[in-house]
Image (tube, rainbow over all chains, first blue to last red; front, side, top):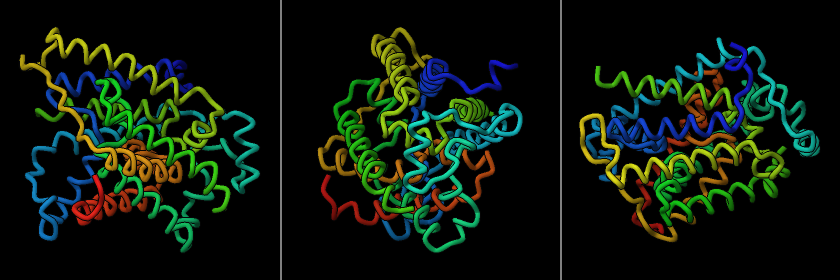
Length: 185
Length: 137
C-alpha cells in the first residue's frame, strides 16, 4: 500500500491524467471541467436572463457525474490514502512565503491565511476567495477552457488557441504570484 | 447505469489530483515561482502521452467503445478571447491555487471555504455569459 499512500510523483500523475483524457474520449466525451460552471448556471435558471445559458444541460450530465466522482475521489484520497497532509516544498518556496506573510507553508495542503474558516468569515478573506473564483470562472469561459480543456486536451491536439490560452494562464499566474500576492497578506 | 463509468473516471481524477498534490495551493505557487519541476512534469508528461492518443484517434486506429470515430472538436479561435481570458484565468488560478478540477476535489477533502471559490467561479461564468457580446473575442 505504501506506493499509493505516499505522495505520487509527476511521472505517475501525468500518465494517469493522460489515461483519464483517453477514456473520456473513448466513452464519446471530452475532458474539460470548467464547462460545468456554465451547466450550473443553466440549471440555476440563468437562461431566463441570458440566452447563452438556454441549453439542454442534460447532455452534460456525464460531466456533472464526473465532478461528483472527483469529489468522491478527493474524499477517498484524503481519508483513506493520505497518512500525512504535509507537502514537501522547495525550502526556498517556504522562505518566500514566510516573507510575504504566509507561515508554516507545506505543513498542510492549503494556507490558513486563505482557506481557514476564520479567514473565510472575515470580509477581506471572503472577498479574496470570491474574487479568485470569479476570475477563474469568467476567464475560463472567455478563453473557452481551463487547464484540462486547453493545457491538457488542446495542447495534446496541437491547437494554437490553446497555446495562446496557456501562455495567458502563465502571464496571469506570474503577475499574481510575483506582484500581487506580496501585497495582499 | 451508463453514467457509472464517468463516476469511476472522476474518482480516479480526484485521487490523482489529491495524491500528486495538484490540489495544494502551495504547488501552484511553487510552479509560478519556478521552484519545482513537479507541476511541469505532470502537465508535460500528460500532454506528451495525450499527443499519442490524439494521433491514434486521428488515424482512426482507436474508436469509441461504440465503434464511432473520435473527432476532437477544435477550440474557438480569437486572440483576445484566448489571451485576455487566459490572463484573467491565470490571475484567479494563482490566487485560489486551484483551477476548476481541483476546486471540486477540495470539497471531498472537506475544505468548506472552497465553496466560496466555486460560487465565485459559477458567478464568473454567469457574468461572462451576461457580458460576452460587449467584450472582445
